Length: 416
Ligand SMILES: *[C@@H]1O[C@H](CO)[C@@H](O)[C@H](O)[C@H]1NC(C)=O
Ligand SMILES: *[C@@H]1O[C@H](CO)[C@@H](O)[C@H](O)[C@H]1NC(C)=O
Ligand SMILES: *[C@@H]1O[C@H](CO)[C@@H](O)[C@H](O)[C@H]1NC(C)=O
Image (cartoon, rainbow, N blue to C red):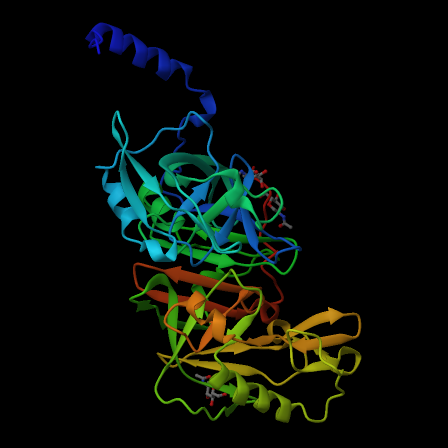
């Protein structure tokens, strides 16, 4: 092959630079946290954020990477690139492995993005993608910010079972290639994020952590007024979010469990309802059954739930249906308290069911390390969660209804 002359190379690169479309230029957030809206997809119960050219990516607390479909003319990172090594650190048997690949001309980095909803893995180039959100002062979006993130390309077929219109997944797990870590590096903000999942309307996430103000106006910063905090624990098998609990209580009475020692609790936005390992599920559901013995039941119950009630007779409080509270007694001494708003699922006009599900034997592997409890989307909704990687802590607000607000109360009007 004839070596091109340096002058020619320079000309080519100049021409390519000037041909770059204007909108791909990175705009700086000036060290401000970034805010994005979150929508719950009715068909899949997954949560998405419009991060890629205003098109949604699924937010996945257990996802180690960002992946999306790519244009044919995308750049590909070389296999020697340190980001390739980072992508490499996830084990292939979980579908997250990245292998180096030598092609005839150069070595390029191939990633193996995984779609947990379809249970499918694929291969794609490790590339740089342009993502966008708004800088924020915690009260409003201030101005749009675009930034490049290392992401994996994926074939269109990997979009199966994602919400309609979604173009990929934004992994939020505890890895260097997850979205929060990449926002922290590119925007020079703290490596933490605040997640407020909506039950309807638009929820909110703030990368960089906070502050976060929810309407009505004049309320204090929610991230400064947390109900509790607990250490984040590592699972050697998987870089997701785990915390440790001393036990469970129903109606402020501890549930007797056959297993001793702390309970491993995972957090997972891929599943609609909290699942519990059978040995924990059984006594837990029995305790709730006993505590609600007087309430009018609906039989047979509506699957996948076991305890369903005539919701017209449950009674309401500002925290949801008036049912016994559930306490997850966490390491560090605080309780994650679940009130009616997060425990009772309205399955039809007159029926509400206790929204906890038994972990199937066949599903255990999906959650890694067989945690006792995996908190699902419904139980996280309308609670502000602060995932603080720097302090290795999870902070939570408790059900925001108690403060007369919800996760759908961020003021998304651009500040004047
Ligand atoms: C920034 O905020 C405005 C106002 O809410 C919104 O219309 C726009 O889509 C946001 N931009 C991004 C990139 O999220
Ligand atoms: C946590 O919950 C348990 C069981 O309901 C209760 O006994 C304990 O007092 C609670 N602790 C705090 C700090 O609220
Ligand atoms: C939302 O923010 C805009 C811009 O700052 C402001 O004009 C408006 O009053 C706010 N809305 C509410 C309900 O506070």
